[in-house]
Length: 293
Ligand code: G1P
Image (tube, rainbow, N blue to C red; front, side):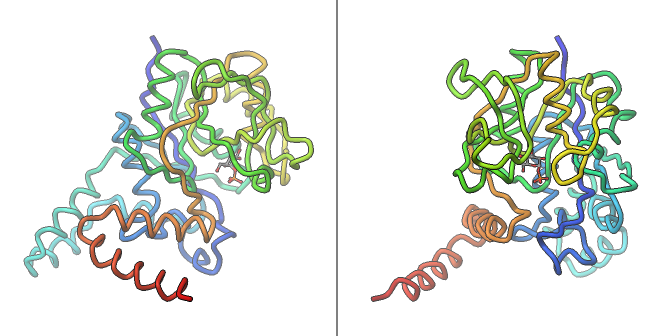
């Protein structure tokens, strides 16, 4: 029985969709309420039972490392000021997990970013979580994938049906539903035009992948957008091994997109006991103003 022990979080993208906010800070550090987006991803990984996490970074990404490091000076200040709750939170973040970092020296695409993890992963199945996709729900999305992996012992991808006008933003599956919410993948294509898309079943940013992907990635040339695409390598893998798609439970937000970011901010804030009361009142007054008459 193969077990998934390691996760990879690619965080080397340039965040062009979020300029100018991402001019001097990584998009992964943009806050959703009061936590950077990447912290939600790391907490999802830990809540799913994986503790060895590799973050693929690029230029301008030092603040990610600093965020998850111990901050001695800040801790002294918080202690002196008696802000013990904040102190506990800051200390908790510094001890969350054993994080490892490797730098993707050129932004050659998601496939290349994952390829940078090959030494860390070695010859075992591993999880990949993309920072633009946040999922809110009862069971962590990654845990749902791991549960299916335990049964099928083969590559598993999180999928979701998207509206026709969004098909060209995603990796799209050609697949057959084998059981409720579980698809057997026949083919995959990255960002197809709607006319030639095999379905509206889109890859969301969570994967469990077999290590055979690494030699395939080594041979994968540039694809959509001139980048080395993970989807193209998975397409090859699918000819050799079974790949499954899982329609996961939970609501997904594209926080790399401005509208998705705003939606996530509102809904994650409503989940927060310390904010929900006042925030709900505020939203009510905004809605009344918007929809009056
Ligand atoms: C990446 C993947 C794509 C997937 C998407 C999910 O695209 O290449 O297959 O559907 O993430 O968010 P990107 O958003 O990096 O363009």
